[in-house]
Amino acid sequence: MAAIDASLALDLRAGLLEGPVWDPNGALYFVDIMRGCVHRYDPATRIHRAFEIASDVVTVGAVALSERNDLVLAVRDGFARLNPRSGVVSKIADVEADRPNQRMNDGKVDPAGRFWAGTMALDETPGAGSLYRLERDGRVRTMLGGVTISNGIDWSPERETMYYIDSPTRRIDRFDFDEATGEIGNRRTFVPIARQHGIPDGLTVDVDGCVWVALWRGSAVHRYTPYGLLDTVVNVPTSCPTSCAFGGTDLRELFITTAAMELTDRERAEQPLAGGLFVCRPGPAGRAPNRFKG
Image (cartoon, rainbow, N blue to C red):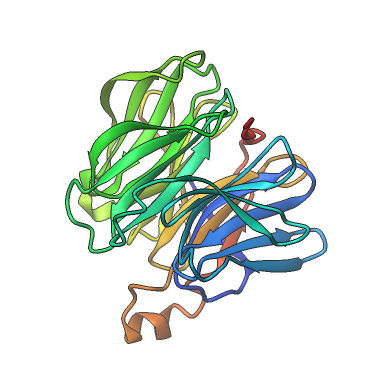
């Protein structure tokens, strides 16, 4: 089994970084959920820009690319668009707008250009969240209910399997996926995550169909083969990796977001880089991200 160390790419010391996605134009986008902030980072020039979303939005759970060359967001109470040139945010659709104690969490665009994102209760009430799908025409469909912390999601290279995490279940699940209709079914466990390895958070699928998952309180990212076998461990020098995505000109750089929000004062002193963006070159290549086609 391969073991690799990640190094610091950007020292942000943020509360809760999440949801990295690589723009083939040469930048990584990711969010700071609790600050309601979208980050853009160019590793070649090391130029970093932060978009502060309007105060009435409060949180931003996920960011995705679109075919219009703007960004689609999963915000506290629904879906929105961000123009990265002007910084203007416009609402697409409300989701749970009447539930102020809920927020959107992780999300991603499927191979057909629909944006999936899920919700959770601020106090992590079991079963209070759902997984939603933003259709290309702007309508929203509920795809799963009874979710506690909706998290990592991605699709296999052959587009027939959807991987999904509801973090407290401590497992990665997989569904049969119909690309044409967007329907999912036949949910089953792909990989159970042992307690000593942490809590599964965000994930990405590489060009070989292997699943990379960030492990909250596990200080690592694990790579599982399509057969569920652990074959690579990326060590991260902080307790709470949150998600990961491949990027760079050859899609062989693995970017890893982390969090500092739940660390004790002692842990913060021991982990001064917590809440930063990390990177490594583990060998395998990732895939270009899907774009929202709305």
